[in-house]
Amino acid sequence: MKYAPIAIALFTLTLSNCFASDETAVRGQAAAAPERPGEMLMNGNFAKGTAYWVVEESGATGKAVSNNEGPDKKPSLRLTVVTAGDKAWRLQLYHPGIKIEKGKAYELTFWARSDRTNSITVNCMQNHEPWDHHTQLNLPVSTEWKQLRFPFVGPWTDENARISFTDLGTTPGQLYWFADCSLTPALSH
Image (cartoon, rainbow, N blue to C red):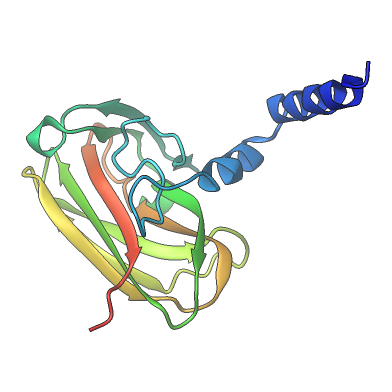
């Protein structure tokens, strides 16, 4: 019976994890070890579907499916715009729980394409009020896979920032693919 307190503690911990909120679960996922040295994103290749990622639908809707349609048939995420919103940013794909340091340089690289020529906005923003996101870049996407880059310098120190692919909710039926997303501190020269 000397192990009973340990068994009860483990049962309580397991039970509390079963009833964790979605936000707690996402934060817990973000605390796991990245797949590459220096990598700040989890599941950047989308081999685990949308694990560690959030499809935000706030007035627009989308359907995300993991597949092997990426460059060289590698894993990717296909996002279908189901309904458009009154503003393009109403449909987003983002990765929360990223630690950003003020003044430190970072670089996001990723592969993207769409079923038609368009553009998307990529940003680093706070994942909480006041939702500051002045670090952003509008990038073109086409029907061909293209590797894109988003270099930025941390505008603030924040333990819960996010990388967002936004302005996706413009045209019902439009398809976007994302693959091999990587966020690392920029190498100093």
